[in-house]
Image 1 (cartoon, rainbow, N blue to C red):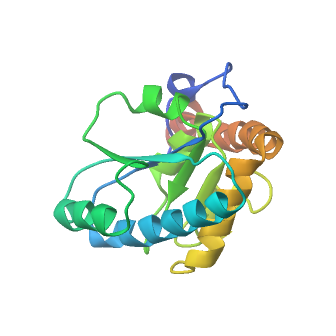
Image 2: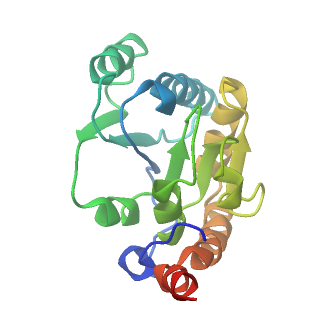
Length: 195
């Protein structure tokens, strides 16, 4: 029996796909296994490529706290990302933040069946995630997002650029994410437990 969530909390029927500044979001503890340094290096490279082709630069919100907070903060300065990356700390309004975002990113070195990833899909977000753990149960390559080998900065950056540039692709992946998330509805999970 798989993990389940209340899909209705995350439903976002009025998502806007043609915003000028695309907003990426990552939710998770600032610990080694989440590998935020990998995400930040990939995001830096994506910004460099987007600058070369004269495209509007996206932003990245990171939600969470943990033992790597200082390291991550220092890396943001080192990579000159202070204008584009925002550390929002621990928040209790995750559904609202997901609905206000355009792309979900996950850079984990190790994962189980991630509730955060299910919540992102339920919110109708296209997803870029590492191909670890059970992520491929939620992210279907070329259907609702991109699966990238952990540590492959170039591929992660390419996925960011592709989704940032292509509003039609974001919309397609968004609809597909909502469908994928339907299989993780808490009502189905509860029914299976009852059976």
